[in-house]
Every structure is written in structure tokens, then in C-alpha cells.
Image (cartoon, rainbow, N blue to C red; front, top):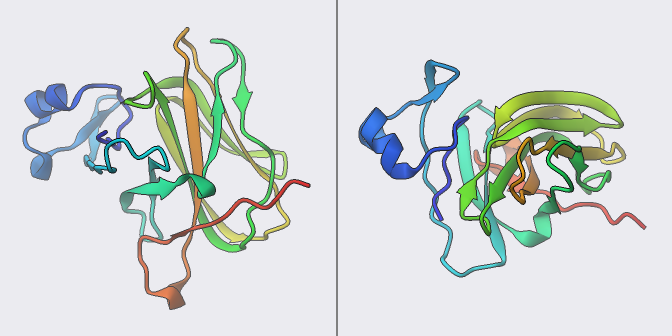
Length: 186
């Protein structure tokens, strides 16, 4: 399945018609052309990974296929109720960047939801409306701080959300970062 870094839920074909070929594309975000498209092809039929997008240490949009062991997954409860992930820490501290994506239709299509939020130690640190993904930089994250992600669907679709934290260690030499495991909650 293709992953689109966007703030609008549209098909790949519709985006090509509206914005041109991928190397020239920008996405409309509330009428402003300011984001580029990225398409990541995860292996078809691989239920062991999910495509998630986030901003890297340089503020560039990235999209990666992330193994399930690094991902928090949860599903919408009701179209007007807040649905949240577990409220747990990650095992590694440092410069973390989180990414949350929402999908519907068996994870085939990005789903724009009414509201997406990120909480750090019970304090809201990111809040966006009418998006299918959000990303948050957490500099100097301590692995004792709990992180929770929430969304309000705003529709009657069954929405599934996926969240990941990516660590950026300049010594590692990996500018896309490394996924971080979730700490056990018990």
C-alpha cells in the first residue's frame, strides 16, 4: 500500500491529476502548497510492518515501513469519542520524533480524522485537526516519561491508528533514525 505524507485524504491518481508527477508534487494543506509527497511501498501481504510517516532530525518528511514490535496500535471506539493508545514510556531516551498515522479499510487508505493528539506525561504537546498523520519532536526525552497518542475519528468509519517513536543519535550516522521499543507496562 502507498503511504502519502499529506493532510488530505485523496487517491494517488487524484493527486497526480491535481499536482503532476511525484518529483514535482506538493500537497495542499488548507489551500497552501507546502508539503511534498512520499510513497513508500511496504511488502504486499506483510502483516508484520506498517508504513508510518514523521519528520526527521532535519525537519524533512520521512516515511518508513516499521515492524509491529515498535508500533502502538489502537482502534476507534465511537465517531465522537477520543480513542487513545497505551500511556507508556519508550525504553530509550534522547532526541525522539514521534509519528502517528490513521487508516481505514483494512489499513489500505489513510483516514483523515477530526483530531490527533500527542501527550507527554499527561500534558498535551501536539494537537491537530483534519489530518491523517502527525509528528512531534521530543528533544531530551527521558525514558521515564510516558507518551500517549489519541484521536477523535469524526466519522463512522472504523479507524486504526499506528504510532512510532524514532530516535536520532548523531553518532549512529542514520539520518532517518532508529525505531524505539515501547517499555513494558508491567
